[in-house]
Amino acid sequence: QQQVKQSPQSLIVQKGGIPIINCAYENTAFDYFPWYQQFPGKGPALLIAIRPDVSEKKEGRFTISFNKSAKQFSLHIMDSQPGDSATYFCAASGRGAGSYQLTFGKGTKLSVIP
Amino acid sequence: KAGVTQTPRYLIKTRGQQVTLSCSPISGHRSVSWYQQTPGQGLQFLFEYFSETQRNKGNFPGRFSGRQFSNSRSEMNVSTLELGDSALYLCASSFQPRDNYGYTFGSGTRLTVV
Picture (cartoon, rainbow over the protein chains, first blue to last red):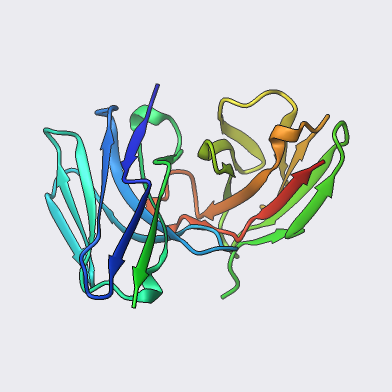
């Protein structure tokens, strides 16, 4: 069964800290790994995404690190702000999953304390 | 540019009833996917439609069905509602299947079954 395992379930950091969220996958056919941010009452919004041919991608304060051999990837949020408080989901998709079907991790609820 | 529009935002139904949820994709997007989000199971793929045809289906019972119209708008239907069907139902649209970067979620329909 295709799975994406995400940890931790919740995370509390102080403003300016660097929260790190980790994900691991099983299906080697996955070739696209996005991260989504979800605020209460809203749908998930794409934050940043990476393909397995690169080991790191940075967009603003958000960085994805990707380890293909370990089948793991992580999200780092630099200089975190209270406005970053949200639930973060990692996901994966690929040819092995058929059509474009995202398989999501269970989510990490991040709280950034002022 | 208008985003993905889901109606209604909230619904309360009784066990055994049926319900129809609507999704209007971003203008020009022809692929629509549906997801169920619950605290316990997270985000799970229901089905995907493109050009009025179901392209892929997740692991849900036959009580869950959907369709897409010629203007790309989509509806999903749940018959014989169960308490466990209480969830946030999310719709996502993209230009075509496997359009990774254009994948945009709506804010969802919150269904409560009592």
